[in-house]
Amino acid sequence: MNTTPLELENIYDLAYKALSTNGCDHFNADSVATTVSHAERDGSVSHGLFRIPGYVASLKSKKVNGISRPTNTYLTQNAIRVEGDYGFAPVGIKVGLPELIKMTNKHGVGVLTISNTHHFAALWHETEALAENNLVGIACTAYKPSVAPAGAKKPLFGTNPISFAWPRKNNTPVVYDMATSTMAMGEVQVAARDGHKVPFGTGLNKDGEKTDNPSEIANGGVLLTFGDYKGSAIAMMIELLAAGLVGDLFSFEAKEEDNNDGGPARGGEFIMALSPELIAGKNWNEHAEKFFEQMTSLEGVRLPGQRRHTNRKDKGPRQINSALIEKIKSLI
Image (cartoon, rainbow, N blue to C red; front, side, top):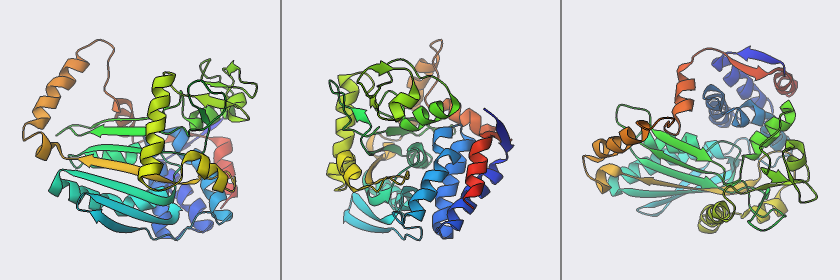
């Protein structure tokens, strides 16, 4: 694979120009380009520039509103709904998250539901933002079916990721963001593009047989859940939280509605914030740090999110797939 070094500011500019050229105003293009450049900065390449052609496709097909103006509605003192105005999810998150932080700091617990948006990004952006404000963050979202429930060979679930972030005073938060499938579909697609195999049993081919060929999984095959029935149960939970509780589309409904332009399908997101200060008391950080000290004292253990935060310290250029850069430039 040929790569080209790009500075972080150039990654943002490339994403911003592609979005703004194809129908996004500044508010929308900036929200998405920031999310994309942060993903590249932290090494989450499957959610970085790799996603831009899909974003553009959904703008060109008019599925996504590039001039969206999401709005907040307080459902209760502890719950806000963001009406996404059919824009990209990072725009709705940008509008709703500050209000969630205020609400949780006041009441100890807050829930943010986002409806009528199109989600293509990683989830750690929003949970980490909560943790940076000394709040615990949990977020999950569904997507079009690509994952078979335990015992099945046909998809019903999306990759249904879930993210969790725990704040640490004077330190980077502990953050994980994981698909409930064996691997995120974006990672499978990147492996297929770059000619890499994936672990055997990541998914099934079109004949229902386990395979290590990412192209067979992404094209006519199906992903499996991690941990068999355990991951399947968590994926089901996420469908119910991100669709049933939000009042938006389950994965099978998103497939029925989507125009298959290659961009993100419509759906919802569930975000919960908790204040350890109000719930656990003033020594919450010191208590949790003792736990983290025990974890990291074990040989071979690192805290979730540590690798991304280490990548973030590198302010230099990132190596980007050259063919991808040319593809994005052709969209401008």
